[in-house]
Image (cartoon, rainbow over all chains, first blue to last red; front, side, top):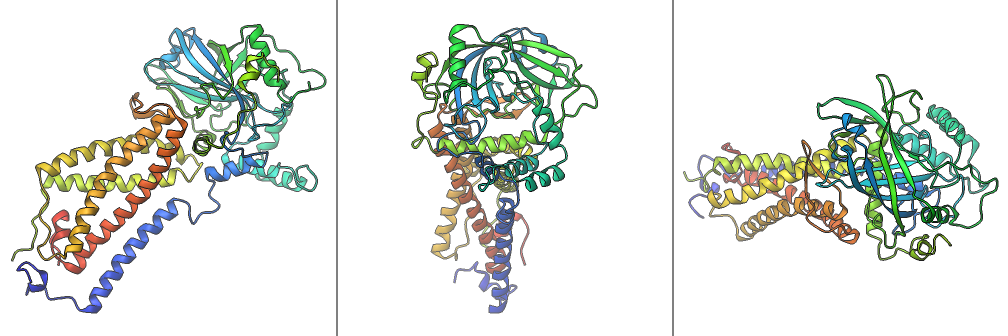
Length: 371
Length: 180
């Protein structure tokens, strides 16, 4: 044996076989504990933890998933747009895009739900995603919907809402007992649904108002922070929906394409500035109507394109992609949306080979909206 | 008597233990953040991205340090297979500590997710905006992370084996503590 072997060291007698076994066992126990802790962190022992996959499975109850498509807001249309900032928001936020000037925007109009080939209906929630691309990075993404408030305050409440309002296969309608349990478990849901039920619908995408719903903090160059909720308010006149819904599975998108060919479509970016006591962690509660409103500039649609050749397809409208000068609030839905969107993005990115052409094809866009 | 191996130089020990804490934290943060939709998600992602870049910088420094300050030799009586396993696992650890953050940066680039380093500083993308490229790198990131966790366990087990069973000074050369 070499001279430096511990087995030759008289001050260090060799371990008895039993001692070796105990020490090997202790090492094994340490490694097993580390592996179990890792598995616990991954959620292996927590089947009830709300994971992005469980949220997506709940959304799928409303139709979906369709391989290659977003797990929610699957049916959509891309738009190239621009934001002309008037500089009015620069006092609230140091974000470069609020300085006077114009920045390119990649927009996406969509319908809620995972059904990528659903028929357009007047009652389906409509959405607008915007990706502002100021030079030098610090981009801003926002996904907005045309509801005045969100129907749930937390990810858990939204999960329950999706589950409990899903149609019962036997009756085709939600189970009243489930609805009762939902309202008992999440008392904020019923008042929010009443506010949503009282909203006046517009005729389509072009004259709709899109709301971010969540509060964010705008931070200016001096470091002062104010809570803000923003909306995209149409410049074009709001037209009430027709008495009976038009025919055509894509009528909402057809109308948008036709409107864009006819006229310039623009929205004002309106910031509502919150005051002390206004809820920032509860998207089910509206802020008082008299809050200061700042018109920060105008979003103008330059052209529309199908997802097949549009630049919105590879974009995740993650509400936590924020520039320096806009910060997330304590609204728990922001993390929930960001985490779930990230998972949906990863899933669909891995399914591009199986993806069918989007419902709104380049031919429909080129024909001026004739599906 | 000769204990077979001297101590690692102090810069090597500082880098080893600093990175040990950061890499283990990173593995747990990574596996935890993708498993939840709770408000912890935002906080964990905000740590994961800049910490990954910090590890990328540190592993480059550590590689240079390893050339400047070579590690002490392994004990002469270490069996050939264990010697081979030691060399191979250390090469694999270095490769993974370098590749994981780089793949992370690449996959975020292909998805056009910004990497905020704090203070309004963002890293530029290093790959084109491409869904298929993102999907491949995203899968690779998870696979490499699980492999790294396995290797870290193996490394820990081997270190404890040296310290508790062989008692050959290898563990002490990194802890700086003489084992009994």
